[in-house]
Amino acid sequence: MTSHLAAEFLTVPVETVGRCVAEVCACAEHLGIEATPEVVERVAREHLLALVNSAPPPRGPR
Image (cartoon, rainbow, N blue to C red; front, side, top):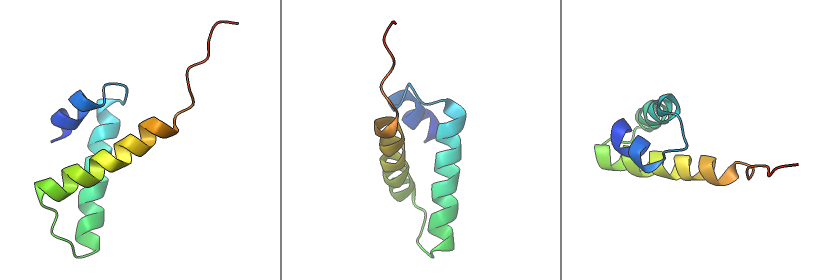
């Protein structure tokens, strides 16, 4: 799952994607939600989208 999401989010380091997946699994289990691959992937994708979309735009040449 991490490699699949890492291929989708090329600008996010693989370690960050892996940490996101692990945190989603832990959070789901803590809340008593079954951490199925589908649920984990969907929630992790939303978190990664938020991460990518919240990054400031690259600075142009000065």
